[in-house]
Amino acid sequence: MSTALIILAAGKGTRMNSDQPKVLHEIGFAPMLVHAMKAGGALGPAHTVVVAGHGADAVEKAAKAYDPDVQITLQSEQLGTGHAVAQARDALSDFAGDAIVLYGDTPFISAETLAAMSAARLTHDIVVLGFDATDPGRYGRLILQDDQLDRIVEFKDTTDQERAVTLCNSGVIAANSNVLFDLIDAVENDNAAGEYYLTDIVGIARDRGLSATVVRCPEAETLGINSRAELARAEALFQAKARAQATEDGVTLVAPDTVFFAHDTVIGRDTIVEPNVVFGPGVTVESGTTIRAFSHLEGCHVSRGGVIGPYARLRPGAELSEGVKVGNFVEIKNATVQEGAKVNHLSYIGDADVGARANIGAGTITCNYDGVFKHKTTIGPDAFIGSNTMLVAPVTLGAEAMTASGSVITRDVPAGDLAIGRARQENKSGLAVKLFDKLRALKAKGK
Image (cartoon, rainbow, N blue to C red; front, side):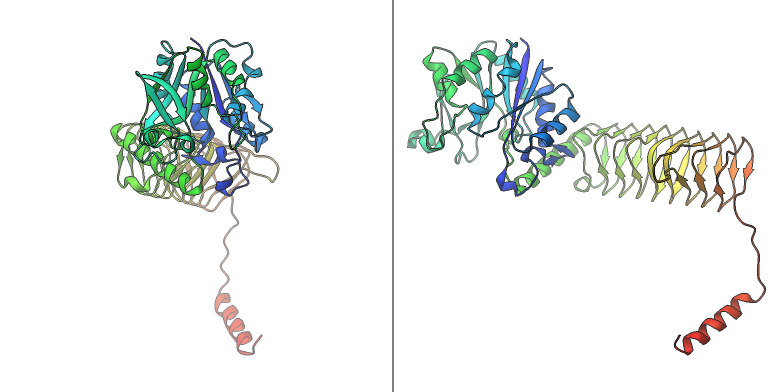
């Protein structure tokens, strides 16, 4: 049975005290909404529909950045979860498969849990995701009868006996899409909030003779984010899980609590990550690499056997081949560094192609930006770039070319040539002493 995802993302999130829509606040360098889309994406959905409301343009931009095929529908008035799901009806008008309702502010539902819900749909009309709460608090309760889900009771409506139930409602529901919308049509808003509750469909379904069941998941998966404090807690939970997974995969984290991962970080085994390293989005590090302390990586690929840092910054588009060394206070952006090349100290390599085994001296800068356009620097294999060289792009240096330290290179350098681009030094006899005597005399006069 094909599946459609309906992700509710219309809420303002007042308790976040933010101009940004709640679902766009990030965990692991990705909006919460993306985490929900990513989990649901493991099912290979035929459709993904995001129901937006507050900040709809920003929500749409973020959703489409992750999945260009996502459909966006608008809930102009927030009249409850049932009303929100109903807004996806038109987007799924030609769809007859299962629909799973997710929440953009509940980022930790796992792909395995959603797969279990899909499997349960083979034998039940309605599947609700529940969890056994340590402290049920004000959660809605899932009331079972003869192993069937009989109804969902909101906390304010529970009896003392029902409040003793610890099986709680996550809000995540799976059903045939046509059945889902038909049930929603029967939901009424005769409650204190005047809202249409999605949870009411279970009672309606049971009255119609339809079956309902509960799939259980760990409570941590159902964590919803409503405040900055909860966002911080969610980030800590995400990082703890990511660190544990990395070590299980054979990565050495010297000081695990100081290393931060993105939602899509990939690191090969036998890699060593020293303290205070940050992996932004889009990073792949192959096996046997060393990432030294205080380095920051984002949107880059580091091949096997590389040594990065300390205090290195790899920016989007940095592509490092095997055995590359990038040292302290080096920044690389949108550049390819070929096998065995070294960029060891205090350098900026941007919009460049560095050949195999090339050595980039300390303080080298590729001057790639003229204020309007970016330009490329090409450095051939086995080239030697002297310290404090300015490479004014566009410029090409051939294989085994060399630049003298302190040079400003504005023209191509043929293979095997030495380029010297600096003024001739002149020494003025005794002038330093005379100059200082003059300055001290001016200072003594108060000038």
